[in-house]
Length: 71
Image 1 (cartoon, helix red, strand yellow):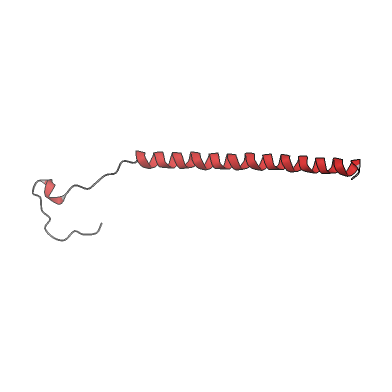
Image 2: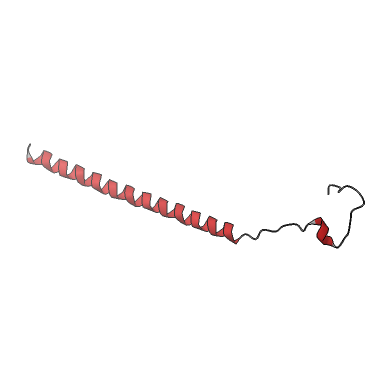
């Protein structure tokens, strides 16, 4: 192996190493964004206030005259 082919091999490995680190950085950024979105979505879900309609018997004895009409 001569000197020029040895240098080419080193340069080729350096480019591959740099590309590997850029890929790692991009993957970590994507994972961080997904984690942040999951945390925000979960916190919004826990902050949601659920409401329940009152039971018909709790209206003080009021009764409807007929079947409930669609509105």
